[in-house]
Image 1 (cartoon, rainbow, N blue to C red):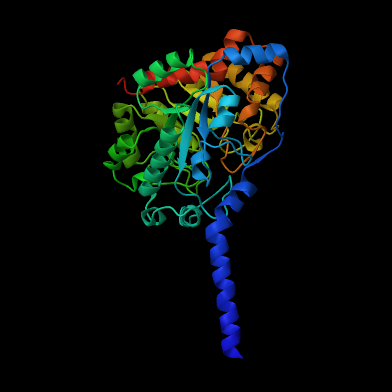
Image 2 (cartoon, rainbow, N blue to C red; image 1 turned 90 degrees about the horizontal axis):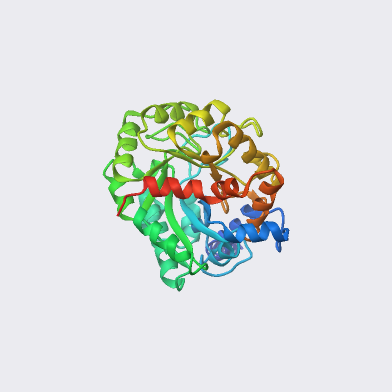
Length: 389
């Protein structure tokens, strides 16, 4: 009898392991990446005509984290290359998520646990990625380059300003192209070694957030325990990033880190995805004072599309947050940072990007200002900040 029970329990465990390895990652993806307003989306003829003329740029997309083929049209989450094309998105910055804490929240997280290990196993990533954060970044880069090779020209990855300028010019002739760049969400991927920044650079990463949901050895997080500023190592990292042409991203960092970086930065920085505290209070949403200092630096904040960034997760809510940011920082310092597929309940998927154009028209923005907000400001930062090539 005991042997039969043991055999039955072993069978149950094996079935559970098999289910985890075959379905676990896809289940988590479907559960964590949802969309409030479902496609298809309709906008006015005027908004559609204007949107078709824009060079839209979005600064934060976590598509590569999940067990989907980026090149294939899907119905899960918010993005893939076909849906980005449908939304007339010219430039998309794809992020690497290397580690997230268990019980993740916006207030206080330690860095001594990790959700991504289980996801790496469930996605059948190489064994090295189970223990190395740097190897997880390498895997993301390889996945992106593989997608670009299979995309028949619909996804082109760039690493220099000259490449970006060339592909933008080419896109004026051939619209069905997404120009992709790679970013890192949290420099815990350096694993405490400055030389690993060179590795990230060689893998094609040209933007990097200093911290994510926990304090690391580079900088304090808005969601960490200590919420400190740049560490001595972090100051070395920021200096080296500026030398190499890796754009500094202040999304998720603590207020002290914001102060430290803006005090030492010699080049424009970005907030790839976030919100403004006056419209939607929260630990990672920027105050008016911070927005003014970002503008003085020449940087750009990407307004997000989810509830914790804008409180009202609708196209009108996005436009309302953008209006406040523009009123405070100026129209040259505000862009888009959707956080699509970042384990959020998104306002709409990538095919719904014309809804933002329509909402900005309803806010009274001119067509020239809408062009800046929807992409030209981000493109300017990239052309200024990337290596010339």
